[in-house]
Image 1: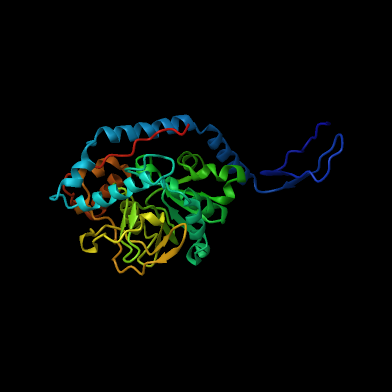
Image 2: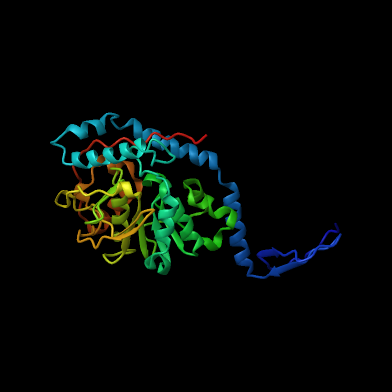
Length: 353
């Protein structure tokens, strides 16, 4: 094949089309853009190519292991039997659902599903139902949790040309990242829906980012279709993420909250009167078989309730410490701190073989 010389002029993108081929020729279309755009694109490609996936994953797993070491392994068992613990009833429901999913093989990788937002059979079907909701179709920016059962929701968000806002795992490695489909290729879009892909292709944002979130998708362990009451895995990250988005002005009471779960995760024994002020209810539930509009009357949290936030949780999350310091600095007043607590154990993570 003959070499093709291209004169140097400001271009940032070469789109090679091959409508025909002879022994020594190809047709090439050039799409000019500004030289500055070229430099930005080149810089982005340089950053992506320099991203060390193995180092990022090793650091993420190290942080998970560090968190596990600080937690009591028997905590969840104690909570099952401790009637004096105001959260004991939540742990009984969670354990019942986790046990059921494992016993009936509803659970999917990663397993066991205990202490996780559990992945489940036909999670992609539930995600597809979610993607057909009018509120999803109209949304320009969707916040989706980083857990495995919502991976298809993240993919459909990007595939639909929307902005995807997703938190770094457990908020320990950062805050939120924004991913946009126009910066991804079909081959990288699927990877961008993973924790490594978020770090690789996402744009990290800070608390001062001006952004409007049109829809929130959360994972759940159990949810009541009659009231919209929801239980997560017990670490409180969905509540903290919601509170920070309220602080940023990215969402308000009208922002709908959706969850995707298996039908067996629907329960009728979450006592609404025992929910805490920061517990986040859901407006819509998508399962593999149906879509449920809860018409919830449970009030949505108005922000971060510092008096409920334990020193242990605050010590885990750098962005929360930064926010607390910022508010105290600007207001000139010290914020309250919640009572000390033993944090729940995190899931044991095993590599898929």
